[in-house]
Length: 466
Ligand code: 6PG
Image (cartoon, rainbow, N blue to C red; front, side, top):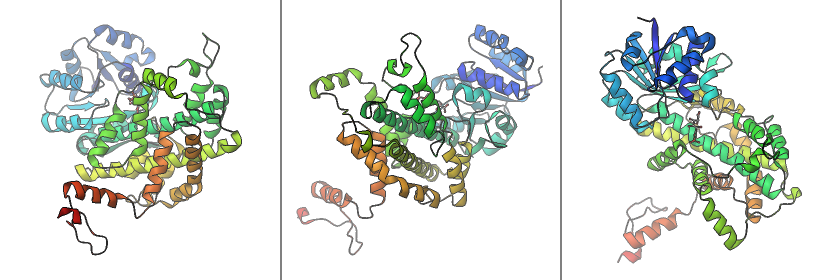
């Protein structure tokens, strides 16, 4: 019997990185992969950490090698593989053994599993890619708090740290952890899209080459936009392709992949009636980018969109300010959606805790998230737009956002995420909107009724009803 209290199943990129992280933090860990050769290759490659890693060739040996009560981490692809792995474990584990799904699970699946699995179960979002899994991810836990507490000593030890604070926390019951992770991924898509649009304005509008654009991102990474994604975008733009001796960025196909977590967030936001237009614009932009043949055909038909922009008409500083504004508005949407989900599913999600967990380790980690954590700590119920620090930032930068959107539009350069942020801002600061026309139309063709502004009555109908 090993004295390992924890085991990990699934030695893919993320699983093997997480297992090494766990071993490095001093925990003996048992590992298993369906393909035995992968298990042994992993153990052999573990170097000095091999002493803490026990490879096993069968699921039965894996379970037997972990001391009771066991903690079993699943790092297998989301969906059916998780259910299949849980079913295979069911015959082998004991009633007190804790199963932790650490993949990008859909929170609806996690809710279902939480209600149907006999064993203690947690669904945790692990963010930070391979580097994060190896050296410190951000971890968002979901499920009974007592189960989180059982594994917290390990999960906080392996997580990223902001100062000496672990970027690992319990988010709430059931699938709350996987929901917050999906929200993270939706925001990740939006952050990436805002950066890609700034890249497009510099490339197609201002005629800058990849090396020049890299310098801009690296400069922006010294200011309010300081973040992992701005940093790596500068690095991606700076790399020269060995085969062509040209910027690598110039030979990468402009069709975005997506495993789908950002899409899940856009779909869920619609169910919640939570407006997240910047995230939705980012998902749509990925879908559209994949239609390269159609775009080539439309370019032949209508001529290319992008027209050169006079640099005096679009200073880089204005673009930086526009991205700051777009980012704040996007996160305002994301956190309002999180609150809508918290109310809908009775999760009691805490925006301060979520912002704190996202400060290090995860893909959206940024300097601005510490400001968000402070704003939400001051008043957890207040939106980011209403928080003094951020309302001042928006007041200072929304003209720049408008200038970027207008200039891009006049020069045929698509900036859907920037434009969605601006439209959201304008709509949110217009107390008298135009949905009265929608209500009139709905009543005209469907007698759906409308409320009156003057006397507050509802269920009214127009004369067309007679
Ligand atoms: C993370 C990332 C990760 C994500 C991949 C691919 O937090 O580490 O969000 O979970 O799945 O980056 O995501 P897409 O294929 O959806 O871009």
